[in-house]
Image 1 (tube, rainbow, N blue to C red):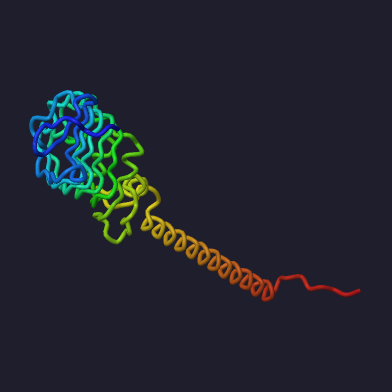
Image 2 (image 1 turned 180 degrees about the vertical axis):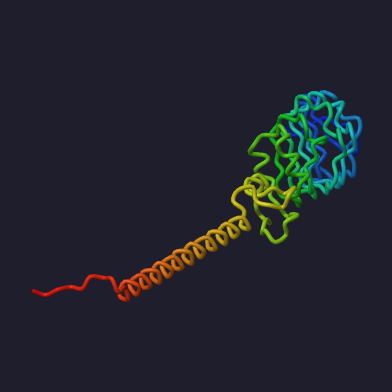
Length: 233
C-alpha cells in the first residue's frame, strides 16, 4: 500500500485517495485511549492496532458505513459494549487479537458475518460462551481460534483447547460430558459386575441344590425295601 499522504488530526493519518486511515503506534506516536473522532466516513480500512484502547463504546464506528477492514489488535481491550460494531454492514475482516478479551458476547458480535482474528486473548470458557458460540455468524475458522485460557471446569485440563472442541464433549452449563460420561461408564460397569456375580451365585446355588436332591434320591433308592434285587444266573 502507498503510505498515507493526507493529515486528519494529531492522532491519525489518512490517505483520502485510498480511503485508509492509520492510527497505529507503529506509524506515529499515537497511543490512542479511545477511537479517534472525525474519521472520514468513506474510510474502508482502519488500523487502530498497538494503541491503548481498553474498551469500545456503543456506535464507536457507526459513521464508517463503508469500512471493510478493522484492525484493533495489540490493544488492551477487556470489554466491548453492546452495539460497538453497529453500522459496519460492509465489514469483512476484524482483528481483535492480542487483547484482554475473556468472553464473546452475542449483542456485540451478533449479526457480523465476517472473518475475525480472535487469537491471543484470555478466553474464559463457560456456559455463557457455550451458548453464544452457535448463534454467532462469524466464519467457522474464526471461532475455532477461540482457545480456552480458563474454564469453569478447572480440573478438566481445558487450557489450550479450542472452545469448539471442548464443547463437543462437554456441556459447560451442566458440567457434564455430552458423550459417554465417565460416571455413567463406572455405574454401568458396577451394575454389570453385580449382575454377573448374582448370576454366578444363582447358578452355583442351583447346582448345589440339584446335587443334594440327586444324592437324596439315591439314598432313598438304596433304602427302598421293595426294590427288586438283582439276580445272577
